[in-house]
Amino acid sequence: MFKRFLGARGGNFATVTAVASLPLILAAGVAVDYTRYLSAEKHLQDVADAAALAIAASDEEDETKLRTLADSFISGNYSDSRIHELSVASLDLGEDQVDLAVQGRLPTTFMGIVHYDWLDVRASSLAVRAVTGSVELALVLDNTESMTYDNKIGTLKIAASNLATELYRNKDADVRIALVPYAEQINIGTNNRTASWLSVPPNYSKTTTTSKEGYWHQPMKNTDQCKTWKEAGSRLVEKDGIWVTETWDRSCTAYVQVPKR
Image (cartoon, rainbow, N blue to C red; front, side, top):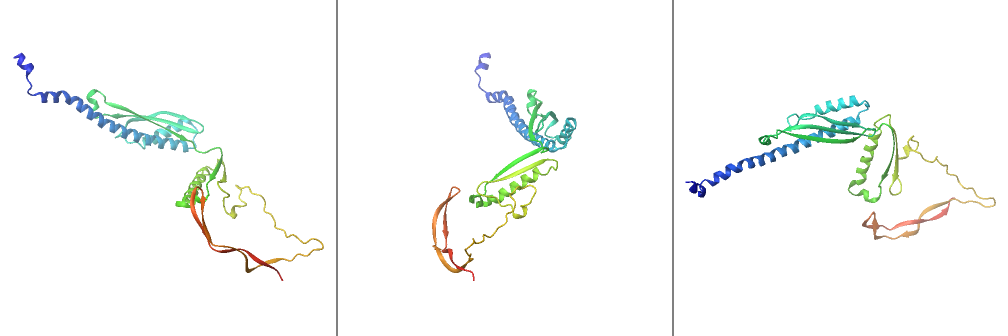
């Protein structure tokens, strides 16, 4: 009977299934719990980023009060259904930045079969502190012809304006911004000529040169009679790395001048 038992092949599928069921269930459980872990880690990272930015934007300097601010901000923004026992692991406050680390625990669903009841979840975030001292910034703005395509110049204006607004938001900060044209010049409007944040040469007065002794000066004026014409034509030109066809109409470049009477 013992020999017949060793040679029997009946019911082997049930036997193999029973033996393999435990690792199969464990593999499925690991996949489910790992997906939950990734979701919890992303949620924790979002909370850490928001808390670090809130601390960096605060004018408070006391470390105890800032840690309390971090605890309250985290407690009010995380979901306890996804992460348990969430707390601030470390808070490093520098003069220019805030380094925040948070930690929590995720209860497992299937991995408890092998006595893995919890998974530790951690996240860290580094944020630059709000401007409180002196800042000198030079904006090198590209205003070449290629910036006219797809309204790139409009996007540039909005970005530069938003940056300046954020820097000047803190009234106690000493902020200076320089504008550096990428091509030739930047038009900020003649109404800003006397602005306190702009340094320009003083206005100049236009003087008329008088005739020398023994000579007389006769002012000239243009007429409608053309002296030099520029004929119509076209050509290929390279503008900011892009070849375009430039065309022009026939036009007058110089008119006949006659003395004023």
